[in-house]
Length: 274
Image 1 (cartoon, one colour):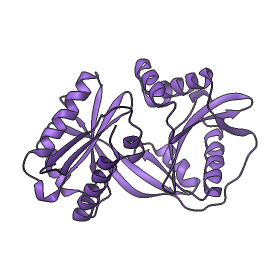
Image 2 (tube, rainbow, N blue to C red):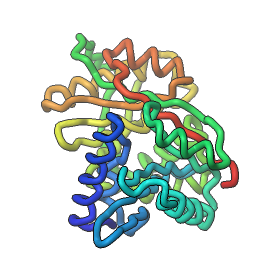
Image 3 (tube, rainbow, N blue to C red):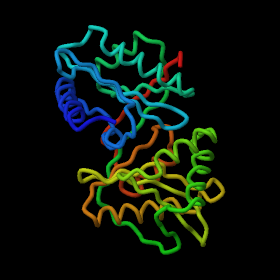
């Protein structure tokens, strides 16, 4: 895992790179801070951090996001970092490697033209704008704690997010006890209907892994569950965020109807030799 000193250096480098292009990098600091082992890649010049590649494992795929100090670009630093990240993914038999490129980053788009990749998907970051939400008692949210709850999370990842079973189990078991995240179970009519995760940090609450069993979709369960979680986090004083793929129009409409608005977008490119 990254040391406190390394995390500070990463944040400082992030600020420099973001100011250079007026962008907002997606570095998932809650994941960086909770690593059990070092998974990311750092490049130093004269004891100064000038290059970084974040490695984010999501079971069936890995997302790579990195940066190089503006004064040290076009020296092959990011190419070396990327090779290390891709080699690690290959060793772990990862099916898909996605490269995260901000929609507004010209340097990222220029680099992508030099490597074998293709556009995969656009993703929107959404922020909740205060909206009147109902609180329907027919749907409840509770912490996930039992083996049965873990199994429900695994099955929902298989059914709703395209994980392979081995990948889903490894991913869930690895992240089940993360201190920064709450694993939640959605219940309706006395049965497990879905799940989600909530991460609270720095005044913001992020909702991840939101899914309802396919047989129970279209019954309003997702909307009621999301409304409950949003109201709870809002009462705690958090700003509330989530992410959704641009092509997932059903989810996008649901989130918009609950008060979420797009404020940022990321483009993902599939590395073709992974």
